[in-house]
Image (cartoon, rainbow, N blue to C red; front, side):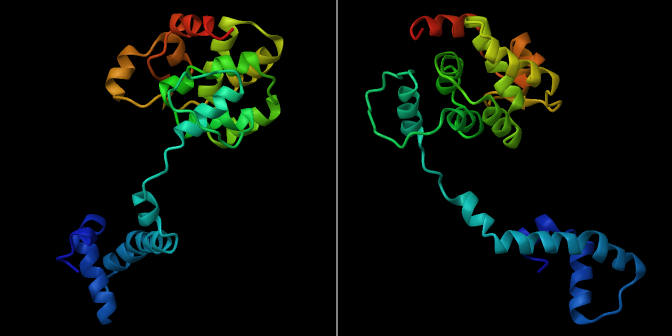
Amino acid sequence: MLKNEAINRIFGKVEIDTIIKKIKGVKLKQTEKNYLYRSIRPKLIAAEIVTKDDLLKKINTKKKDLSLDIEANLSYYGYNMFSLKKKKAKKIEIEELIIKILNEYPKSRFIEAIPILLIKNKVDKFKLLELAVLYHVKNQLGYLLETALLIKPTAELKEILNYLKANKEKEISYLITGDYEFLTKTSPKRIKEWNLLGRFFDEDFIKNAEGYL
């Protein structure tokens, strides 16, 4: 056990010695009992859960890239990507599509589409908010709703935005992944006001909208 690199990454030498003593039936000192109950057992319980759920296999399995499905659905809702590859895909409800982009496929070209989707389509605001809360993307959605209103003000979108402004997540998160220190310095002010990091600019959204509205 002491020679196993994976075990040594999880347990310290004292913990490993304590485990070996416990297995051999050696009487433990009080400090070793403390290690057993406060540190060793919780780690072993977690390891058992990881094994039962087969988490290692799941995280090592390459996720299927559904970008073309996203592109096809964007087209359904009036945002053609002008991709050379065309594909028919099962239609995703617009609220689910928006959240799926923010949660699973936060690529810049998809994020740029969201304000257009919000302007051109009727959304179920309660379903959209419910999904945003469930997947912890309230701030991302709030920022993009605000962007949509900069392009074309609508009373319905403003109602959702007011709720999100009053219920922002305090934790800093990414609108799109990147180098933390770089994005901390270069993220525009309006993005930072939503406790987000990312490099998107109002003028780019407005220019992009000219081709779709």
